[in-house]
Length: 73
View 1 (cartoon, rainbow, N blue to C red):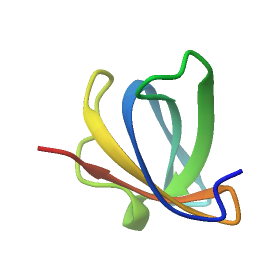
View 2: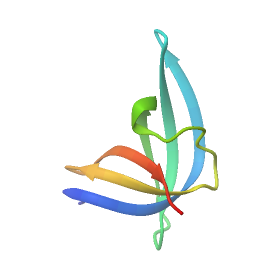
View 3: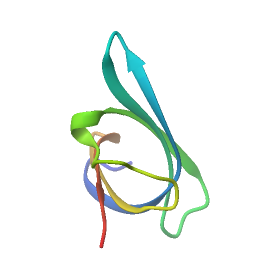
View 4: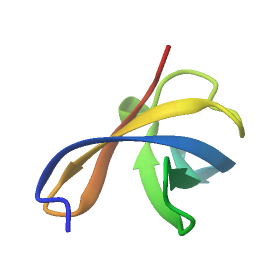
């Protein structure tokens, strides 16, 4: 369990979703060194502009819940 902090990952899939005009992203990603794919739904304000599958990212966590994704590199 990741209480708080960041982990490096690679985006496997990105699906924008509009709910009542608010843009959210359904993200699938895999942490480096792990084989298990994880998923998160985050608001556009918590994700960098134009996320794409294959991007190297850093995922921020609080109480084992993804709270933000930023591009690495």
